[in-house]
Length: 332
Ligand code: NAD
Image (tube, rainbow, N blue to C red; front, side):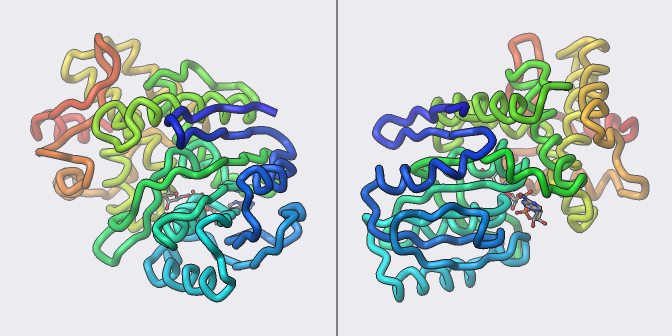
């Protein structure tokens, strides 16, 4: 079993990655000293082992439409009726939407109860379940209400992925592809287990250095400025990772247009993204002016149009003039 530590002082925790990782759950719960557990799960009951403590099953449904405050309230009310205390534990099992909602409920209930995540999608294993960001959507936008709440452990059981549809593999590959340009090196062609370990190791190092996303953690947004805009412009018909893949190719082109990297490195962006089976071009029919408008309103864009771009000193957050963005969009 692979173990990656997210080093955060007395809130440090391990991410266990490998086949059968779920079997560690009873030992982790015992180690926390929890006397009962609330299990928020989008997968069938039989997917989790016996927890060794009385538990409350709270079936959940993955997907953005249930990632909202009313679900957080519903979960917290069930925790209360079950008698969950601050020394008990919440367990989440599902895609990134489920780990985000259960994580926020755990952050808020009694001002914080321990949570253990068991992510079941590739995207949730390589990204969403690690790092302590939890959030739900509002009608006004995605992830607008949330909290930082680090889990007590994350169990990435790669056996969960056996039933994952092809499109959800691609969704996760988008996040793995962007890791190529922010320090993970070339993960193409490696077994999924090694890709997950490398992506989590990279994320753990950035989270340890910048837990609250004030600087270095921004690097994880490589490919995301255009990625988020594409998701919104296509009404979320593109999966997040698919949009990030195109955003990654675009980030390479933008860095090239600004003279930050040479043509070979620009081309590498397209090769890497295509190598994961992802699209590299913007879907036809999208209005560039609309994409620029959406990129300007990205909540990560502090001022104007900002992108994490590769360069001679490695990747960093860069403000880019609108004219360069529009010219580069025309070629992507
Ligand atoms: P998701 O939770 O909607 O799951 C994607 C799809 O895969 C769903 O249809 C789900 O039912 C299915 N699925 C999941 N596991 C499965 C399995 N083992 N077998 C078969 N089907 C399975 O979406 P996601 O891509 O997992 O996560 C996306 C969410 O994660 C977004 O809401 C995003 O904002 C969030 N996110 C959070 C962070 C963070 O740091 N907190 C980081 C990245 C993404």
